[in-house]
Length: 152
Image (cartoon, rainbow, N blue to C red):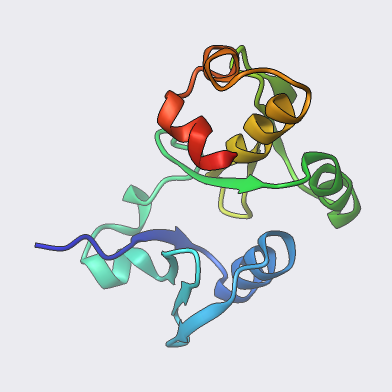
């Protein structure tokens, strides 16, 4: 068996498609009208209840039980892009985790959680460039030494 992709239920395929294309640079791989697959390995589906033979009221918003996760090389540039995009609801404002990664979580137009984090590889490279050893960097960013070595 092979996992293919996650599918998100959406109300308006065009609004959601534009959101992911414009804000997350997702390229449409397949567009079937009510179903769109993106280059990032996920799809959006309008009329999800119809497709799955579920009652329409069983497809709920803001369940807060899953998220899509993206990483960006330049977190500050993405935050500017997010502010410029306009009407986006935040799950939380930007914060920095103990492993030194800055993240922000927002809702997409259908209230799925989207997490955007600073690239862990970029963070590792930054510490290495500042003169920290591979072992020190591994400890600071709480990632395996093998990961830090790959980032060098």
